[in-house]
Image (cartoon, rainbow, N blue to C red; front, side, top):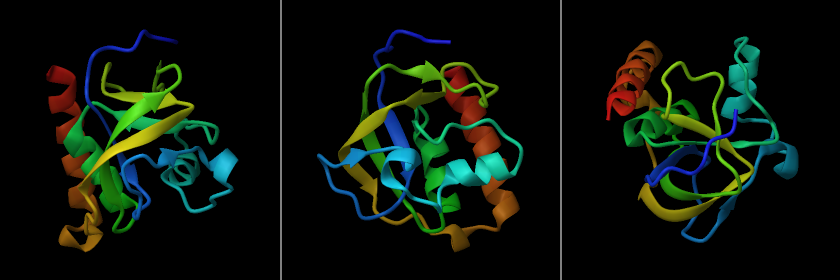
Length: 134
């Protein structure tokens, strides 16, 4: 289901080392095997290897950065049409897009070991609910 781009700030958590102006491309384009998309698919979720995922929830993206294993948190600008993420139960929080451009590096390293894995998942649930209520 396609939606017009709402006025918002978008974030992405994932591979570290990007700088403003860099383009985030989907795994099908980059050939990356180690991705959160692969993890989601491995757990039975719905995800597309031909899309980049962005969120309006900064803390949601922070969790994804940590789950990447010490990934980075970025503010990004979607490139192309935003489509609601069918795997996200909270409307208006997560989006699929063909690509995204890094606007700024919010946190270059989000340490996964700062919390146990289960605590990151609980934080993801809370952050998604808060972002959906905003």
